[in-house]
Image (cartoon, rainbow, N blue to C red; front, side, top):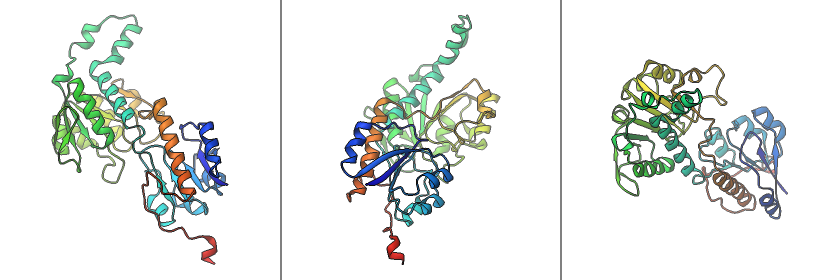
Length: 330
């Protein structure tokens, strides 16, 4: 029986009925309490496969798990996995690229509409026995009068472009891979990063965390944003300099921001973001819906079962070198 452990730092639920079906294929799934490298090495040493979210799958972890053959990520990003080490050590990494991009785009649009319609402020006013709608909302503008700039034009970026265009936003995108871009209803304008942030009323980030995107939105970039604009991040923590963002919102240069992801999660108690009422914070749940959880869970577990039964995975992230068995090293 192949041993596959789902690390319990992952919020992805396990459908027990589905897992019983995998047992017929010779694969047993079990939840193991792991959050750190030491936890994983101690509790998963005999693993043939892992299902992970943001747990640190470092070279040290990979080298300590000699039987490991596959790691499945029930989502898109794999930045918590040492991909070079996994490839070198013969470990297949898979993800679920299609499972929740619509949910991420929906959450981004919800944050945008909350920001421009000032929903949180209206709610707080009414709860405090006020009725000052005219004062709070006098500068609200229609989506048809606003420009949405999307940085990154992968699945979630494209879906947001479609949804935002249907609401009335003028949409523009920046992506090194986007030579031309269209939604289902209209073309969107493609432009350089500096031009996009300088001219958009709202900027929404949809890029992975890489060496190129780390601190992409730093103090200098924030100065170049259009005055009074609004920033949204539903992609990855580490792309925004959070201290600089808090300072820029406090100065009034940005009207506000909405973040679902942070450089350190959970968000630190001392984070300056917590002190800014114009910054909306959600706990890395843009992907979340009952539908997406079921889809990504089933897809991730199925790919693990496929590989352990000698079949090709559906969503490979890397092409691992052939794994050398202990017998071959003697």
